[in-house]
Image (cartoon, rainbow, N blue to C red):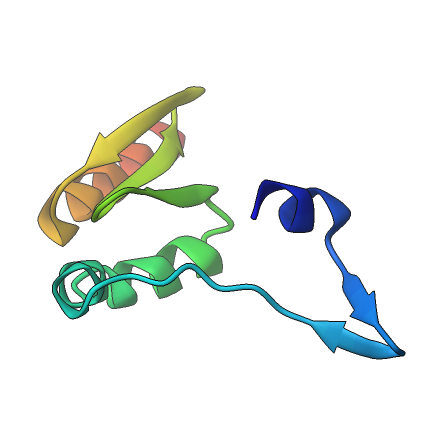
Length: 85
C-alpha cells in the first residue's frame, strides 16, 4: 500500500490499477460517521487523514489533531474559523 501511495498512479498493461484497504463492516460503519466532516474539510481545504481504526486526524494550527467523533472535528473547525476570522 505504501509503495502504491508513493507512486501515485500504478499501471498494468495500460490500465490504471487502484488499491484499497480492506476494512471490516464495523470499521467502515465507524468511519462513515465522518463523511459529512470530510466534505467540509475538503471544501475548507483542510488536510486530513484517517488513523486506524476510525479516528480522523486534521491539521489545526500547524499541529495534527486526532478526533474520535465528528463532533470533535466540528469543534476544531469552529476554533479554526474563530482564530482565522
